[in-house]
View 1 (cartoon, rainbow, N blue to C red):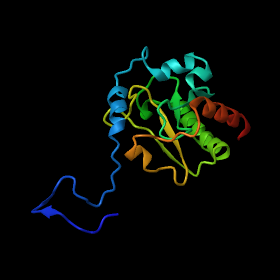
View 2 (spheres, one colour; view 1 turned 90 degrees about the vertical axis):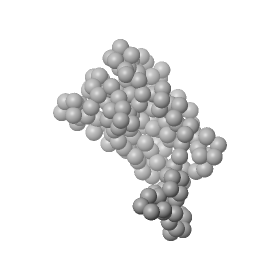
View 3 (spheres, rainbow, N blue to C red; view 1 turned 180 degrees about the vertical axis):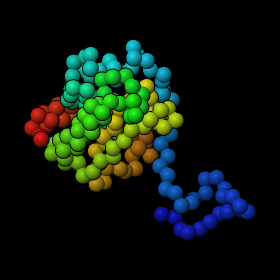
View 4 (tube, rainbow, N blue to C red; view 1 turned 45 degrees about the horizontal axis):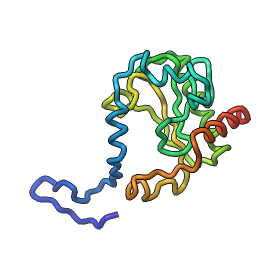
Length: 184
């Protein structure tokens, strides 16, 4: 935290000067954000293509009736999951009651599984809706489930542009898929 010092001149604050907000600058993510925000169609959408391939190749953890659970290819933390409806819809309010219910149920199950298999201490859960809402694949609804552990953030992403991942995506997918079968 910074000292309670103000650097105001007249009625505005100078840019780059400390204020009440804590900011995490991650310019290395800009390359993904720029290329990740494409206008996907049903024919080019990675979330439509994933269920057409095998689970290991697509990193699918579980397939439900209306939605499936897949590892994020660009995870913030090990075990970063996405819950996606099979239908190519952009917004949460486009989902049917059955789709929304299953997305909620799969999210709850994913949390229980991650608490057991990876000892997650907490979670960030959310949906980014539309390009301006931060969705990398705005054309296909998906919910993020990001497991968190006490002390999981450190200086490496900021100083070295490096994120520590303790397991490969294949290993995590196998662990979660097996856990899915054993956790109620």
